[in-house]
Image (cartoon, rainbow, N blue to C red; front, side, top):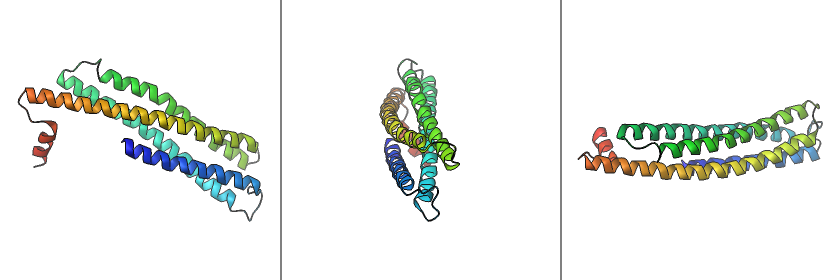
Length: 185
């Protein structure tokens, strides 16, 4: 998951930068009021798509922590492993990560709303630009936090797999990998 997340975060960060740059170019060329300016349309499309992508990647991260946390909890219950070691850690990671992800999503939504306000000539351009810069900065920081938390979560998953394989070996059962191979036939 960490590689996939890093790839998409980098791609979306690039889209946010492209949106920011096209927004500046649109503003410099009076793209909102000039019928022959293609900068405005490019900014609108790239901005909208990158905003949706930002929401998607943070929702993906939240879902990842919910799903893996639940898996760790269920496995620990099934094998009689204590809550203090792994389930508690995954809960703490999820609880620390989620507010940052929500903050990044809310700032992104505010930027899109300010863009719509600017499109209708109701809101000042500087507000949309300031929120856009904040959106870029906050998302990059939050992606760093999410990536670090995912790496910690992967370590916890590996520890749980190792402990389950140890317990299965003690009971004379095949390892998880062997059991999956046998199940597939």
